[in-house]
Amino acid sequence: MQIKKSKVWLAALGACALSLAASAAEPLKIGLVLPMSGPFASYGKQIEHGARLYLEQSGGTFSGRKVELIIKDDTGVAPEISKRAAQELVVKDKVHVLGGFGLTPSAFAAAPIASESHTPMIVMNAATSSITTKSDYILRVSHTLPQVTAPVASWAAKNKIKKVYTLVADYGPGHDAEAQFKKTFTAAGGEIVGEVRTPVKSPDFAPFLQKIKDAKPEAVFLFVPPGEQTIAFIKGFVERDLAKAGIRIIATGDLTSEDVLDGVGDNALGIVNSFHYSEAHNSPENKTFVQAYYKAYPKDRPNFMAVSGYDGMQLIAKTLEKTGGDASGDKFMAAAKGLGWTSPRGPISIDPVTRDIVQTIYIRKVEKVADKLQNVEFEQTANFRDPGKP
Ligand code: PHB
View 1 (cartoon, rainbow, N blue to C red):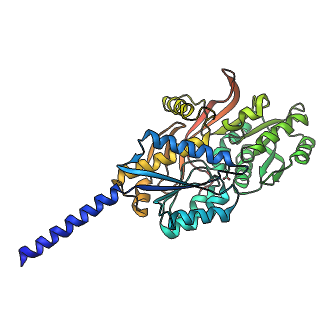
View 2: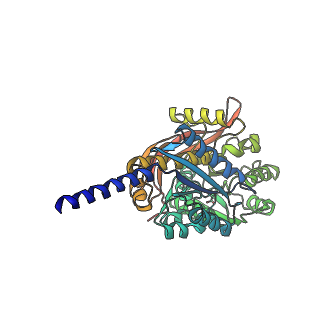
């Protein structure tokens, strides 16, 4: 009887091991929710490019599992579409990991889906500080607006800029940027002489630019989502003679993203900004990344979103290395917390408590390097956490 029982156990164990092996070999499905059309389509393109590049460099497999990447277009600022896309990816496509999220409303909308289904959700751009508090299954590999704003506010105060006018897009990341700039700049003795919030979609900057000119600040601090808006703002700033009136632009590096710099042209020269990634970042990891990116996508310049797509996939790969290929929600989250590596942007890690990214923030100035506009880094703060978190 005893012998019989142990035989049954052994058979059961064998079957279990076989099914574990089968599930480890089962393809790993990753679903990205991204703006692939509309005014923010370049976000989707950059993130997809970065993600595919990492996947290709990994031979298409993570920890022995073939990776299937499924992309759903949420068209930009359309939370209902983002939510439906995340739901379909989880329920119909049965993805193991969600990712992408170009803009804040999209990440907010998908957070409950991650919580309900226990699916890890990797934010690859959306940068409002509070996003990671909306679900225990969220991890972020991009940046937060307070994280990239505080350093340029300190830099301005240290560099004899005393009066600043703030202009931000009227939604989460803009509100975060405005609050952090005010906090850091005024604590260092600076004065805010005016502030304005502009519509997220297709703002007309002309009336705001006139108001800023009349207030005679030494500088305007700016956050608007990069794309047509950044090009329009800088064009209007020059055409309305704000630069001639001696007003400077300071900003987070969203403004001078490599994706839009060529569209802005020489008017961007001299803009000081703070950020986590520059195409000109001088490191072996970045040189390899940039070279591979141009080889794969010769018509596009890599920006911070491409690096975030790349690192988002890298986070998934490194997490699966730790779990032995197991992507089940709770095991995945436990293994991902605290992971760190050298990204093309510099050293990064995932804060084990907030699940947000810890990274170096650089102060940069737009300069011509070999006839190309680049964000040239000249100061840095290492291991910088999101100051927007308690
Ligand atoms: C956001 O919507 O959270 C967002 C969009 C563009 C950025 C940063 C943040 O560059």
